[in-house]
Image (cartoon, rainbow, N blue to C red):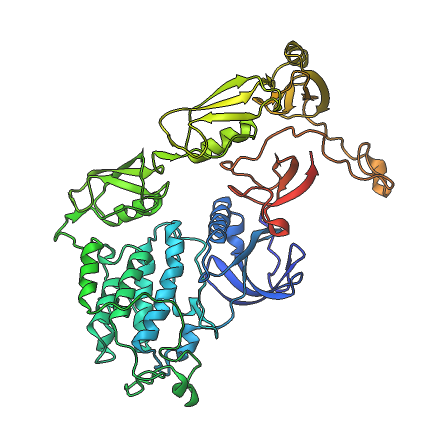
Length: 593
């Protein structure tokens, strides 16, 4: 059976909100369209997965997963993701429309030979690298940066667009570094036709450029990725070193005596493309350092000194995410293996590499094993303020602070309700050893046991023996046998007064879906449906079934409960809580449970 032909995208409306306009770009895997958000009444950009890939679940998951990662990045230099999902035949990502001109158009499409002076060229590249550093830190590679992916706005803002949403598995941050090096070459020379091959040197096209610019471009465009800067962050450090060492332009318009006109106010008056004048961008820069020798020092400190031949030194991976550390080790092309362990660190953020074994700078051999120690934060941390709250809240705060061992001692208190934390050892505000337990002194009461899975009679008897009262509600359950407890309120471990109450949700078995009768064809409804005078039935009175889990992959139609409400997945989703995203989100709010 052949798959149905997808409806043409142009003129379609996604989820009744985004009107898809004319195609403006794309490749074999996606098409990019102008769009209009009819609710916000503003232009947007719509990227659609190619029709032949929509039927491939792996491609859909990869496309939406990468879009959701991109949506989580926070940088003023990155295009903002507004929403993603699936509507019928269309799998899409909606991004904010970027105001300004792509660099390819600013430079005249390569025909006019327009270029920037060194200061402005480096300033633009620095802001591109700042945006890419945010992506690289989260393990995300652009995968195809070109001049048209860099948009310059009238307010001097640089925005990076065009992140590839498929086919980036074999790419590394060094791929983006090469693209930025080629971009710097284009800005300095006006040549948009940059091909792979030997390292690029802008002074070959524009004689008289400072040698440090050749160094920056040639290092980044080195054919062997091992000899390029490892990521956008390291390349940004070198770019800023050179930027600080350059003398300021002699005039606001830059040096207009070069053979090829500089893109500035005078070039614009002569009919060139609009762009910013040399020296005008007000972006932040660090204090000026004297001498280009600092660049050579930076190369050494950054660990670029590779041993000739097949050997190499282990780079300094301190502060890297595990994903980026693996990418860096793989780029050495030495078939290294690696393992992880947890380690306390006063200086490195949790989850990042705190140390390696062997240490940075060690000469490596092919196939060697590398041990990466991941920071779990400092060993001694301040005990959070848990006094006056519930035991459950105190356990949560202590766990978030890094304390895993908690002992509870119940004490009588005439003033505090049962379950209230009276004090802690160590005391609130003191530094505690995360290797040792924290003792909570809690106002005594009755601890609610775990009842889910027990027969109704057995659970009722257990609660009665504790002096607690019981109320029962019934609800269907796909996973719990009829007559057994499928949910409880409050949750296990809660401390109640001796006369406290517990509500049990008892399973009535799997939900029975009654088929529509023939009589419903003329506007009637099947038994149990919503009729002319009735509203559709609301969800049950308890949160039965599956609770949302951050590690679970949910497909379209899957239902979960979260913070007292039922949500249904509109499309594939993982890791995003149901209460985020609103009308653009992947979850549809079905009401309270």
